[in-house]
Image (cartoon, rainbow, N blue to C red; front, top):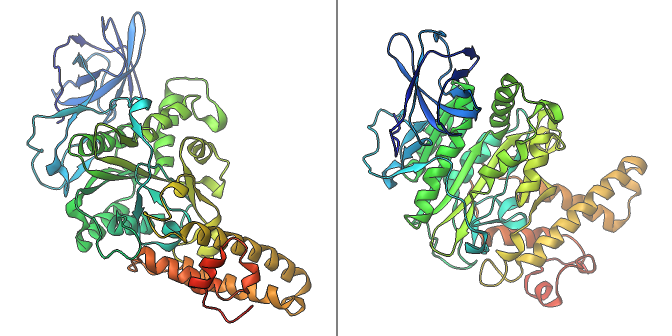
Length: 473
């Protein structure tokens, strides 16, 4: 079990109410919000919980492993006097833990004297460093048009049944610290990944474990798994435990850490469940009114600081109910984070992997992590031209659906060919294909060379002269 910085406290015999994963304790004395408790049932079994609410006469406690088997009279509650702390150590890389930080891979507890508060330490805004170095994922649509920058929080918006699990596993396997295009060195040392899964099925959890193990990536990955049949309350702890380890690796061990959280929708459902049990006034679609601030408390544990060479980059993955991007979870996530990668149902139905929808996707920090000294000097203009050309493809396709492709002009015919090639060669790539930034940029130029030079209005004359390979214009 996780240890605590301070084990002092008091014990109360009996509880007043048991409701789902919640128990209410009267005469609790001087206790504090978020304090950890030990709940002892009539057989002597000990469960962990934390205080959700403190009143003058009673305290509301959520029990991590549920309240099955607890009785009002036969339950004792011991208050431990501090928030939940978990052990943190560099040796946790390559290990698999449950949602509370306990090993589930058959290995021992990490041997360390360092225990950290799962709520983390707030970062002084004046101590933050602006993110500027890119992370290469090996996926063209991300690296070329929605570049992930070290210290950024860039969520992945998906839908039910779409391959976000495959994409997340591929990013974890392939992610490395970026180096300028043309450079033959890839900096992968001091790069770690913390992976947290909330409410996933057993086969999904096994998929991730096997995928990382087979590729050799597991040696630099720490996994925190909360399965679908694990208590929902534990899902509220899982991302915090993962981020606590990430903060230790980044700010104490000077490592660059990529944190992948899946599925944040399951996390929010657990938050809504606890809120309803507590009788709180619901907000939109039944979620608590503090959903925004709760999500922000997770997402904002990301970035770089002046006092450390390390960084935390975050990719939260969430499934949009009914593919509704205005649903509270993706809606609020979009307000807090710096862009989004959106998976498209139409591309998925046409057999394209990864089915990343280019037009609604964006990376707000991309402009500061690409270009000369980062990727290649033509990258910003190339990305803008690809986006503009593909947006025009959608207009041409709409026109063709009305008048027919045969009635389109010569240039519009070329745009249709460009659109098909863009989806099949640039967006689409195999699960094992790991493209360098050079390869991604060259594919982009090859596709733009299908269009006349006069159409390439986002590119400079020097860039066209250097990289354009077409015979048109």
